[in-house]
Length: 427
Ligand SMILES: O=C(O)C1=C[C@@H](OP(=O)(O)O)[C@@H](O)[C@H](O)C1
Ligand SMILES: C=C(OP(=O)(O)O)C(=O)O
Image (tube, rainbow, N blue to C red; front, side):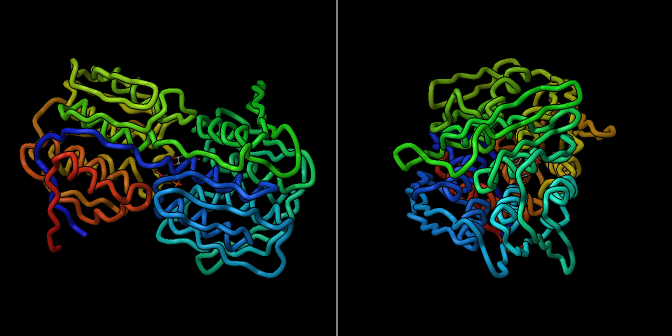
């Protein structure tokens, strides 16, 4: 689907969609519980649905109640017979489900769409191989067999935090203590803290102990989880709210509700990053907004918040001076090579961008004429293009805009409800 979007500012209030990262974790923990849990989650997305589908394939009962959430009955203690898990394009789902299926002793074949099976898995495969699970590949599929044992799983911290989260969330199904010894600096560490926060909500604290050579994360307890009262709430998504906040920093008047000021989501750091770029940010307990302020270039280290790069790059494009976005190496292994696609998106709307090794340099402040952007099948590129359109002189054509369904299916409905122009065109 090709859309012509903008130009022109947005105005009004928008409710953030349910956090995809929290939803994945809440569903997985619900399936690892000893009793049924209702996961309150008003929105879903292709990625959330992928996790729900995989848990069902492992024997959980996952009933979607549209607009309200998911009613989840846990997985059995073991899975016999081969199962196939379709992870769609969701990296989180694949990296969480491989250890989860292995903790049940399943003979599990994992399939996925587009780039998914090409995204790195080796550190997780190696860690599992040392604990009774063998992983093989062929035909664009991944097969895991064997049963995950208790103990300490070792891996590097510079590829994906999702491996650590996955092992921790599988731990309630393993018959003894589980810890993950991560060597070197831990990238995307806030996502491991988010896992710890959701697991704590299910009664299972996770400790993080810094060591000279890295960090050891340990699930403090064994056995199944329990959500107090049988319910768990999925809060709003800071990573997707970031697009609306950037629109505000560029001159739109948008208030985002449903985002928790004290959230464990690392991407609430978007407010601090926008402040560095000179925006004025206002926040309450469950809302946030941004306005223009005094735009200026900044250096932004995104090692811990990789998903914020697409929206922040747009904010940098309108801030006078050269902004340097550092710590972007792992962006190359997301839904697209996001170093390349972020730069290409900005260039397509007329911004001046260069890439120096792993740094993206945005030479901002000049007017943006608008143009045609290939979303590269990456939801965050489609959304960044739409936000750029709010400050372009002409419209922005977004090719393949339907990819927003991965995390935010109603993004363009919300955009139109905020007064933005959205028109479908034939390719
Ligand atoms: O655990 C999670 O929910 C996520 C972790 C991050 O991945 P990495 O740890 O691979 O950076 C992030 O980019 C992804 O969108 C979601
Ligand atoms: C990288 C992302 O997700 P995942 O790794 O779960 O595919 C994302 O949502 O930007």
